Image 1 (cartoon, one colour):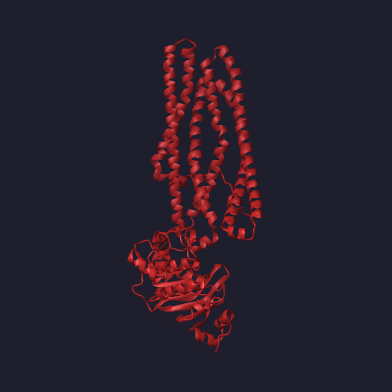
Image 2: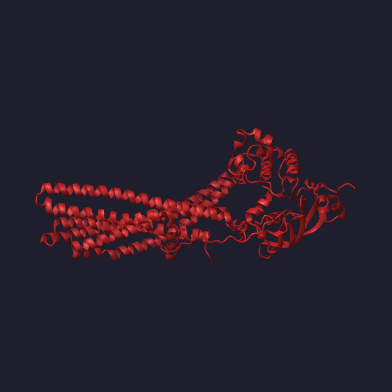
Length: 592
């Protein structure tokens, strides 16, 4: 059984992923090269300090050369100032590199997500995609700032320390290195324990995030059913589990730190004993022993931080795998290499030819469905819930591709259209109009150009019966719309969607339940707005409320995936078929 994404942990280093991350850094190669230059410079100045202390003790303090000692002191001060400047520069450059790579990745992800088809978002929850865009990209940034990049610096420093220790006194160096096997075993043990804890923390954090997202979205329902106490209890349990997992992870990290510190102290004790004997015997200078102890502390410091850096690298590799997997997802619906462009409007605006479609294999929504919508014809599509009415509208805009058959717009298969041109030609007003956070003007001008600006925009609002709505709002067209338009009623959002469609001005328009869930006054306004909207264009009106479509030029009745009946209201009532039964269920038998 495969585990959830949040539970899977990979290697701390993956050459393939590192190669792809290296490609991402190509636009910032100057910063990367500057980082690579700063590492050996920083290590050099860091390793110079203890050697200057050795010189000060052996050649000046012990012999009473105070003037020479002053020179060494000034050199030591300049060395430390240079070291601090290099460290600041190194931190700034690595942070800048990480931030720029993170910006590039997020821009690439967002642009890629906009190209993916609707079915992709059916399969992938929004919360998971948000995690890819935010948390996973942030984990990759951590690799640049405190993970892999820091390891490079540690390797350079460790190499320098090992060389200097061997040059100073190889016997004493071997005494220090004798503790390395114990250190490696301790680090491996705590790494394994921390890895298991890290997995638990990720799973519990994912569970807490999912609970929070669901609870905050459903807060109205929670308050309606007075479930605040139960939800608080559930949150406390999940939060407590996460705290316990984090605490155990912290315990192992702290244990590794303490173990390394203890071994470092043991190494210093051995150095004092053995090195002191070497000093007494004249085989080592006193300054050399002091420098040796200083270098030894620098030897153990990177090893102490190994556990944290390992966790950072592991998280970065897992996150990189997910980010690149998302970027490698090919859009299933794309514009053809050589799109066809209709030269002029045809007599048939939309045609379905034996269309079959299933969201999931074997679960057919449409079965050999066929119909036509003529130019400037107003067609209503009705049928029981779940019969595929909304699916028909989605296929017209190629949000999904048909499983079998053809959908033609102006006589051209929608798969032969350029996607942008098709969706400019065929518009859709969904049952729940989506308004973005921003201003009314920004929401009305989603077409991306200046159409509808100024007088044309005001005319569109008037035709959509939305001018009084805009005038009543503080700020008018610059009034603030909150997330998803929650500060507007359903009817107001629908009127604004109609105005937006008038500004966008598609040649073919589909309306999905335009008057559902609105009050009687709003319905009257919407009907008047629809009269303006549907004039001089082909349209398909999807409706459950049959009273709203009796004036349609033609009514199509969708049943079991096919168009079973077609005609005007009176004709379909006279047939006594599916449409008549639907009408009678809503209004009772129509008088003869």
